[in-house]
Image 1 (cartoon, each protein chain N blue to C red):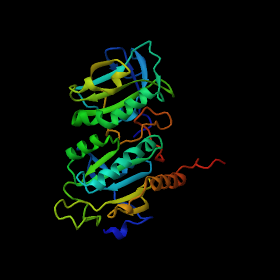
Image 2: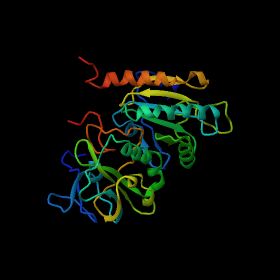
Image 3: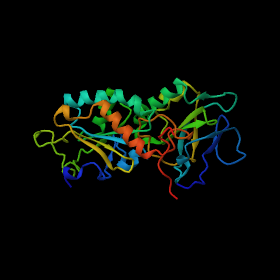
Length: 156
Length: 168
């Protein structure tokens, strides 16, 4: 994956967009979500507020449990419809929500992150397919937005 | 390949198998730069496997914060693995070799079960590059690694791969 891939994404309460100057609140996502060929015609379940909410620490038990639930059953529930999943980092310690991208929105009503952050469904062509997290790790890798990151040696 | 090759210091084959959701996974991708505890399991029907998996489910609470991975290979179909995994409350990966692609190539066929043709229970603790740290023959239940042995193996691997392990 190129180091030049930006992990930034903006949400204005209705739509997702990328690129400096986009409307709405800026989040940092798992960069793998933008590192391949985007899948067109997807649905994004954006569990986040576009303004006002200071977010929660990633270490908050609510955010930890949502990640456990994502590994335990959320990914399996979506099955082959899943395109990618990322939490949304506000800064090195705070989580502002999560985005689940799928080809079909049928399972979005069960999104574990919607217990914490309000969910909005948006159509999107921004995300590429990313292998779902293998678990059981829920910790972040040096501040990367979960489930992204790795401690593997980087290519020179 | 036979089990003779599955010894400490040797590379474990980079298996490619569907996971419990049916998505193809390479073992190197599963490790993802972290130590990996890899288990070969008879299948959901075996009481010994059920007991051992319940132990792993308890241990996953440590793995989830310790940057280490767990994967279980069995001949169960992905949908059966998904149900078994859900019932256990596991948050780690199951890999399905229902077509028994690797069973004989790894030399891990359990020849005493002519009904299920499953894997002989075995466990391997692996470095992120899939080099074998330790191997365990779990045909007899007491041959399997204890949860404490798995902790010690993860400690030994992590000590070797993390340059900032030592205090000073």
